[in-house]
Amino acid sequence: MPKSPYRDILWELQDGVAQITLNRPEARNAFTGAMGEDLAQAYQRCDEDDAVRAVVVTGAGPAFCAGAEMSGEVFDSPDLENFSAAGAAFPAFRVRKPVIAAVNGHAIGVGFTLAVQADLRLFAAEGKYGVLQVRRGMMPDAYAHFTLPRLIGVARAAEVLLTGRRFDGAEAERLGIANRVLPADKVLPAALELAREMVVETAPLSVAVTKRLLWESFALSAAEIESKETELHRHLMGTPDAMEGPMAWLERRKPQWNLSVSRDWPKWPGKDENE
Image 1: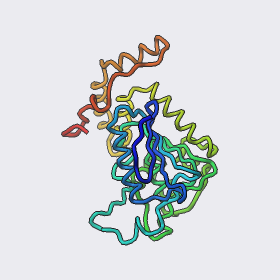
Image 2 (image 1 turned 30 degrees about the vertical axis):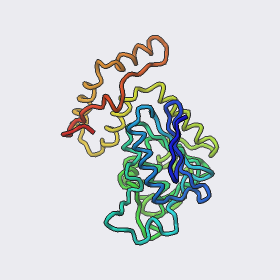
Image 3 (image 1 turned 90 degrees about the vertical axis):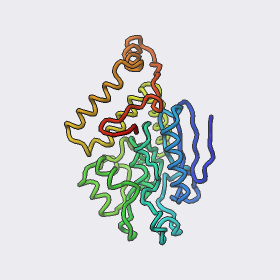
Image 4 (image 1 turned 90 degrees about the horizontal axis):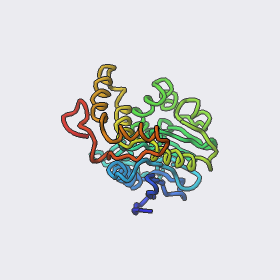
C-alpha cells in the first residue's frame, strides 16, 4: 500500500482509490496553511498518477474539518501579496478523477467549502455544517462562490453563504448539497465502496473528460456544449475502451480499460493547448 508523508494530512492508495485524510484530530482537523499546501499537493498527485482512479477525502476522528485554525495563522494580517483565499491551490474539481467527500462529521467554514469542491458528497447525519465567515467578519472562501451555486443554485447558495447559519445533515440533503446522508460511522465505508465501484466499472478517460466538461458547463452556451461533446466523442470513438465497454457488458464480465488520463488526454476543445 503506497504511502507518502505530509504534515497535516494522510495519503494512501489501495486498489486504485486514493484516500486523503485531514489529520489533526486533536483540533477537529482545523485548517492550517500547512494543511492547504498538503491538500493541494495530494490533489495534484492524484490528478497526475494513473494508478489513482478515484479519490476519497475525509477527516480523522469525529470531525471532517471544524474550520480555520483560530490562532490567527490563516486570516490574521496575511502577506497580502502572497495570500490566496483558495484554501488549496489545486482544488478538488481540477482533479481529473472523481473526488468523493466522506464528510464524517462537523464541516464548518473552510471545512465545508473544501467539501463542496468534491464531485460527490456523503454527509454524516449527526454533523453540523455551515459557512460561518460572515459571522466572523470575513467572507466565504475556497471557491465557494463558484462551487455552491453550481450545486444548489443561487437562491439556496445565498441562504447558506449570506446567513452564515449552521445546519445538520438532513438540511444538507434538503438543500441538495449532500448526495447521501448516513450515520457517521457509515460515511467513509460508503464512500470507499462507491469509489471502488467506479474504479472497476467506469473508463478512466471517459470519467475524466466528463468531469472536466461538467464543471465548466455553467460558463458555456448550449451550442458550445454540443461542440465540445462532439469533439470529445470523436476523441473517444473507436478507441480500445469504446470497444471494451460494450464487449464486457455483452460477455457479462468486468471491463479491462486501456486508456490513460495522462497519456491519452485530448487537446481540450476551445483551448489553444492541452490541459
